[in-house]
Length: 364
Image (tube, rainbow, N blue to C red; front, side):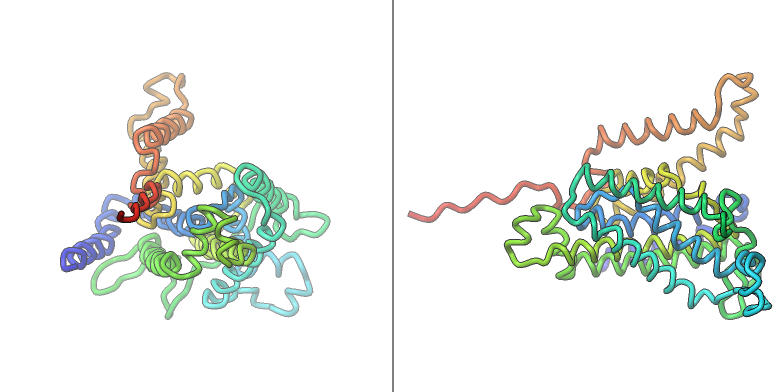
């Protein structure tokens, strides 16, 4: 127990100091850490649906988009510029505080998750994956085309000038100073995202060990047996969809305020596939594995982008090698290597996948 406390304390200190060291090398590295934490949030949410309840969801990025666009509409001048009635009601613009927007984003995404889950309750495996994939694409196409006849989402141009977070008089969009230390904007966001990740890990941990979590796992292992044991599988599945989607909604809100811009291109099918890959390759259903998978798969593309830029591959190969394509190839090879060498994930759950204990023969 003492060893665990020491490890936690060392990890906490390392996580607190890491961005301060990284910002000396440039904001690029802190920004990479920020995105890694955002993907950890997303992966923890999807882990509830895929890892605990065993429901293969390929449209998870839709909830990410719902949260991002909701915040974009409520914290940017788009609605007041487009609709005179809104301008008359809110002459200073719609700029809802973050305390109101985060619960709203979570609730809206959770509602969307249950609406998606309701018609798919009897589907499993490949069929469920196809339906959820379609839902994710519908949301993206919807955001892309909802600029006419009434301009709500501004179509492919996206929403711009989204507010940064302001807490206790601190503007996260501007650099600041505390105790003689300078904090860039991306460093401030790092600490905010880290706090959200810690809260999400605690929620996931408590869910995993609750009756609800055990009911989800029973459905994952054998739905018919779970129903025979008296578990209301319909409600449990809807709860899994809704609970997982809330994580996506909050992540979307954070993404919109961090980028100050959202567009449909940020919520493509590739994003959904990457989030699923983070959960599966990290260790499906195991929180430390999911966090590890999300950090690695989020940081690897950016690290490779930096290496390609430093080496200037385009110039070295006279334009024969496209750095972007080479980067995607290396990511794919890394994922294949993980699947071959660690088929249960980089850090699987210790008890998941073990054979059932042999029954003890009665003594004669």
